[in-house]
Amino acid sequence: MQAEQVAFDQDHRRKIQYNLGKYFSAVEAGLARFRDFEKARLQASQVKDYALNNIDDLLDQLVENMQRNGIEVYLADDEKAVLETLDNIIRQEQVRLVVKSKSMTTEEIGLNTFLEKRGIEVFETDLGEFIVQQAGERPYHIVTPAMHKSRQDVARLYHEKFGTPADADPETLTRFTRRYLRQKFVEADMGITGANFLVADQGAIALTENEGNAFMSFSFPRVHVVIAGFEKIIPSYRHLSLMWQVLANRGTGQSITVYNSIVRGPRRRGEDSGPERMVVILFDNGRSRLLEREEHRLALKCIRCGACLNYCPIYQNIGGYTYDAVYTGPIGSVLTPFFKGFKEYGHLSFACTVCRKCEEVCPVKIPLPDLLLANRRDYVEHKLSSMGERVIFKIFGLVVSIPGVFGIGLVKLKNWMIKLVEKPLWSRYRSFPDFKKPFRRRFKR
Ligand code: SF4
Image (cartoon, rainbow, N blue to C red; front, side, top):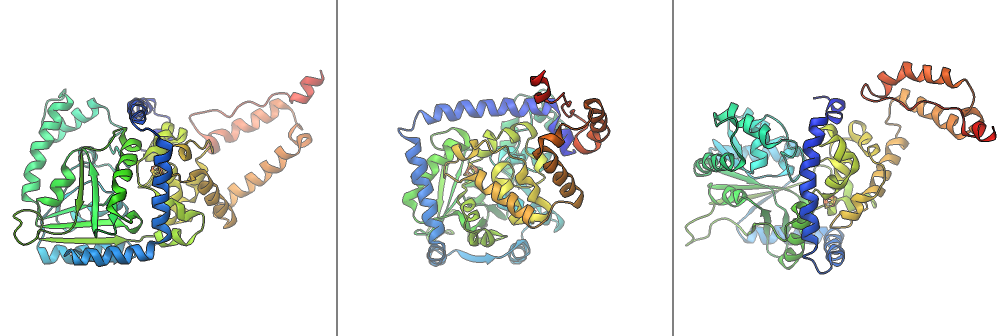
């Protein structure tokens, strides 16, 4: 659907407002369980600052410890490198069926499309991800992928896909999904997960989730592959108690999520469960470019809680698909130009009123509005907007900065001229406010 259509679709807006309302109540209730959430935020921010400032040493430590734990580690600069590495493993292991737990990093590389093209069956196992996969859509939100769907939408979708009753309630649909996926976990050759954190001192990955599907994705199949951006690193497992809690509070309002796993390698001698092989692919895809920039590197502190999206007044109204990107909302508008190009995505940073709510709620204190303004500056300095847009804004800037010029001309004539260009340039769905007689003239009278 066109971004413009989605943004003005009242039914879509009602659904996300409803789901956000539930989220806000949960977060408020969750906050009451912290003695001092501000202090927790400060500490979480310091953990991530420390990790970024010592990233080379920590990555060396992580890789060394992972290899000692029997994990194969690969570094991949870009999407192509990740997919090539994965392709080799798939061939070696003769993989035919993959189960996946929610991972935005795998969305970055279009993993599902890649696997399907190779004739491999792939199943998303997080309930929200499963729903959007069945609908042939991409995740709507980094934490709640099916936020834009009502229970009736999901019931209709399941009815079409699986023949369940068209008015089935959420419990019935959840039970159905559970049975359906349980079989896939058993049959899968490979489980692919992301990592919420890479734990340097343990050579481990840490996963946090509510459904147990990530746990089954890495423990049932023969091969476990992790694809994670290198910025997910934290120095020690001792930081997890803090990081897991701030992530849970801002992500879903919980004190802590239901399942939290630290995975330190494949099955060891004497153990009778777990994967035989574990591979970690550390992904760059523009992150090094962010790291080199003094201001922008702070965006790498993100722990993907989704709070900045939920509290953003723009996101609340236009929703996730309008961004046409994997990462949406304020953090998405900062990151995407670095991951996918400034020319194509630099304009996203203008979808911000600089209200600073995102900065206020971010659990690792990322100054998102400053980074968005820095993106805007770069976009303008590199002259990435179209010539027409630059000319229009130049003229507009000149006109509004000189009150005498702004007041010239008949009000009726100006309104008539605006009406001519309003639909093609502004929007079919709303009107440009009418020009009125200049205030100074009215005041004088
Ligand atoms: S930028 Fe902050 S608020 Fe936004 S998703 Fe990342 S950690 Fe959460």
